[in-house]
Length: 328
Image (cartoon, rainbow, N blue to C red; front, side):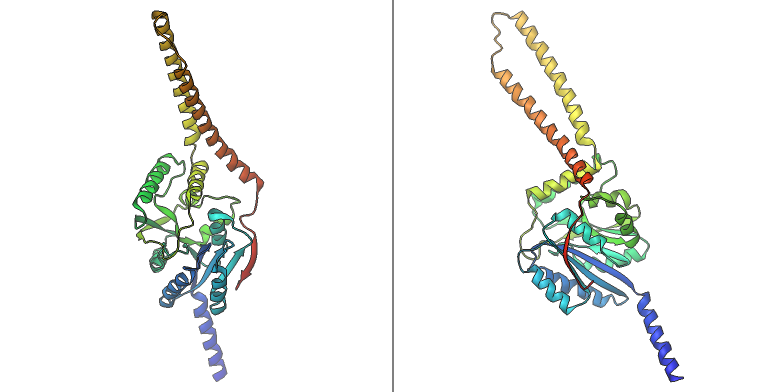
């Protein structure tokens, strides 16, 4: 009898553990030796309080060259909730985070960067919104402690994207948020080797709510973003979700051609009326040549961006290639 009671008690404990929902925290990182342990501690603290949930913390490292991998290995040895995906090389800031998100095994996954600019304190808020029935909960930074010039430029870009995108756009959204596993299954069914994740959320994530927050400064270290990475992200958004640049090329080409025709007619009339006194000279021809050449180069570049995006798609390369997994 006692054995049966103990067995039933064990089964009940097992069932209670089974009904706990699992949350996956996904953190992409590259040379973040000053931040990963602090991020781990803050995330762990949140789940020490959220006792009704189990969790895993997936770090996907983009072949860091500092002590980031060594620190992550220490964390993985200390805590089996920490899981590592180590890439064989740096696959960039677009492919690696997206791939890491697709590897989540929880009922929902939260994507957050390693520099603590995505506050772990919002984890309980996201989970609460998710439990209320929202399949996607997005963190949107309505304020930021970063350089005000950069924040202003980002706002201009977001407004331009919002007006030009054919699928909608979420301003001041960087990817930080909670995603239900049903939405992740939708992403897993899409074979996109270079995805614009923010645009995919706006296009495919119909049932979402927004949590506003003030973005803090980096905890430590310097940002890995530079002009090229920011330009790459901006152009990826335009190419994947807007035909505006191509249509603008056609429109500007038509306007410039019309203005050129009018200028030619005006010059012809002046020359006929003032044949002896009006001298055309070389300056207008040279200026016009450089102007039209620059316009052509600009729009050849825009067309090249679209062709490059098509080329990336048809090659069907993998998002990343893993060197090693730990604790999976």
